[in-house]
Length: 304
Image (cartoon, rainbow, N blue to C red; front, top):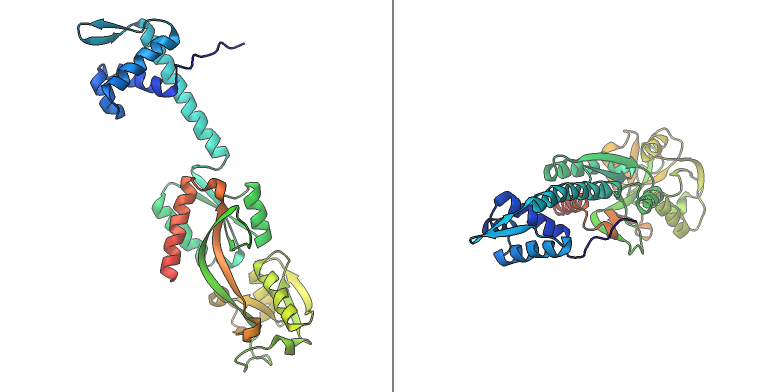
């Protein structure tokens, strides 16, 4: 069984011992550590109590270390180095303050939002490496809880007190139809008049797919969905190819195929998505996440 270490011996006191050994003077050690000379003297004396041996001798008004003190200082240096490395490794395994950050994102945010945030984060922490993980809202939320990603750019979940969320922007949802369709001349779309239309949609779990179903619930009919897809860019191409109509968020406007038109919905079908950066509240002191949070706040301010 390993011998118990006396409670008088602490990491802080070992740090004080090393400062004293390096400076050779109580006052200079105190100045280096930002404490009083009396505090340094008490710490050194308590180490003698904890080791149950003499570590120093008085020579005039000077306190001088003996061989035992030098041996303890050598061990203290190794102990503190090992503990610092252990804490660093532990935090990296837990995703805290590592030199990389894993950011989840919806596909639709990769055109403008993700590059802007990654570049902004680089300005705050130039040495950080970013890993991007794409998925649906449901996928990203699950990965966030499982620790597979550190933060997520997603539709803000409702009733999620375990998450810290920073709003990035709000986005309206539009009716998307092939250019030249029978909807082309309309200023707004009444979904209840589209019961005989073919539709394409995102797979379950995407923030846009949940809004899609809610809109047709209000319209009081089940849409004829002829195809589902797992990413929003494929969805837009299906609309452009004439496979069917769909609902799309306004943020994809700049990446729309030329043959796709976005038309506002009537007011009763109005939907607005809240796109936010989210992370677990248990990680709220992680320096990497704090840097990302500050970057997102800057993005939000510019958007406003």
